[in-house]
Length: 124
Image (tube, rainbow, N blue to C red; front, side, top):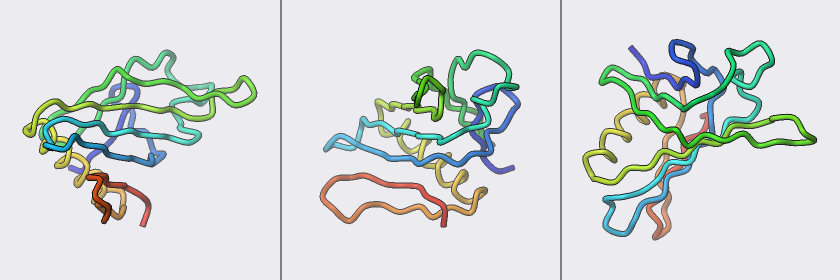
């Protein structure tokens, strides 16, 4: 089993997001910011209200309720979601999901070389 991101349970979002990680200096807390451009979840025929983003893999699921739409000319064009962790255990769990997601979507996974502990996930 690979890993998937869903806005509606049981429906995988095919659009691959840009993902940016930021972590505190001690590494225990941080956020992953996801940006989905023109996701299927915003299509007129989609299921209705988006109540969260679900990151699903063989270990279970990670959930964030911090999801908002970005509008261009009055039309929703992107979804932005933020997943926050508050412990090293939660961060490690998120990173296992991110690696599985990257592997199952043929993505490159790169940490930054700067002093900031950021990482980006992008299509290879």
